[in-house]
Image (cartoon, rainbow, N blue to C red; front, side):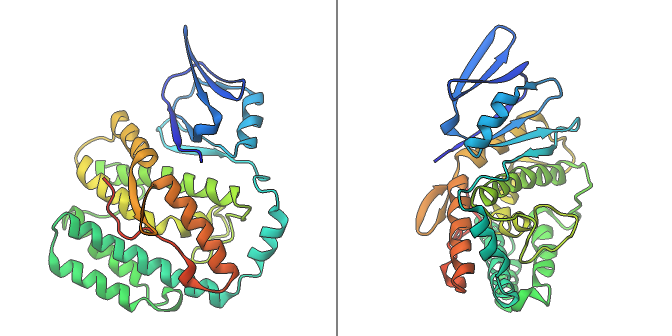
Length: 300
């Protein structure tokens, strides 16, 4: 199973060499076996990628991400033919019932909120907030119609980062920038796994934005978000700038750190694979109990 997220800060060329990624920078060349690579992140505006390499990355189901001038992931190169039975998988996905979607979304939100509570418990935050989050989790109803997710998020972020903190996707302060970057990279790896499994990523169960090509990725990332929250609470400050070193650290953690899922310690990339496959099985068999998910939000 592929396990590396390759971060390209400076490189003149990315080429294919005997089923290896060849990274060329001036007089230096590095070879990385494609079988080891899960995702490649190109974080500069000068790197040239050959068409031959792009086609081979598709064969290996490797996600290629290009960052923009702000160093944020902007373009995702994914093969639409990553699964050998993609039409069959898509046909089954199209038959998922509204009832099953609502029940599975209810379960996913419950997991997310409990994982948020686990992060606060690990960091020894306010016990009343932790109890309230568990209460919110118990109150999540079908399709989270009462928006317990939103109520939990408001309390959670204030408890985690302080009463003055406001979660803002468009903010450039250190904490929001760190969360945005971590979520985007994590979302990309979830999208890659979804596509490789033959699913249509725009067909969500909780997210339905017609302009979003990755609604399902935004659904299935939810149990993993608290992992990013924990790292950012330790690494970033609101009044600091999200520098390159911190971004590389986030990528490294996503590639190498482990969390508990299915009573086993797994890397986050493996855990995403496990959750996606169990999600497909649960949806196809109309049984939310088949979902295998991270047991808590702690991974260091």
